[in-house]
Image (spheres, rainbow, N blue to C red):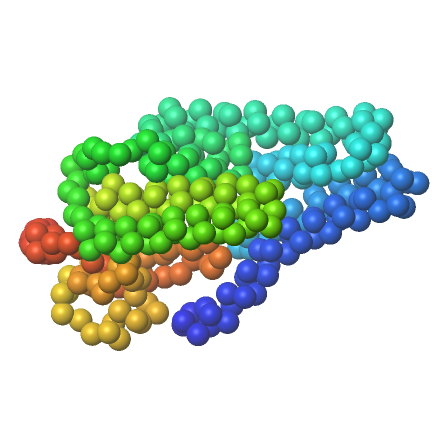
Length: 339
């Protein structure tokens, strides 16, 4: 599939992902119409059917070439039950409570999902094949929605980095070597942080003359944005590019974490054209600067963005503060592999 086809499919795939949320939201709005007060039980059953059917069809659409796993089906039914219970108005919840068989089925789906997920999480911890943090994420994803778990983990990571990490070494695992890229970003990031602080103060003073409530809300939101910005800037130093026993891990703070197996790397280049960097098949991980390293691959690596489908890249471009040691060591590793 070429780049043009991927760009044409992106809006359709985004619409397909957003459709279940829109349908469930519209069903929740309809469940609050005046007609619901006349037939609360029928409305509750219809709401439960619409949510369950929509979420199940979305699960099947995400795995068109294979049947969904049984634990995924049970998790979808549990999620639909929780959505209906907490998304229904009081009249519908009372109607569901007055119908023990329906309430029991919803409760069985939720408890069954929690029990099955707990058993699978226990097997993940007993396997011990990954790091402790990865095991916790994988275990929590067996009970809670994986996207919600990843989002919560990212939120906690950036808040911890912004508020509690003010020194110490970078995050370089054992048997790995880190290569920094944050020195050229520091002046620009510091300038951006200062300008953001000035902008927050000016907005707070101007809005405060109009509405104290709006000023307070903007103050909270702007302060939270500054905290996230501080965490992002600090992540550039704490998360360097890694040369691992298995290959290279290209990182750009909390924004990019792309592992590349050594077997896929054909060559490392320092003199390359702008067309190579702007090629849709190239992942440009250099931030606010021109890259000085380009990894040529003999295969493709996939990276899933927030709003787009998983894209495949055959080249990786990034920038290091001192590229020579990285290039020298990586070429030596490539030579050892060839021999």
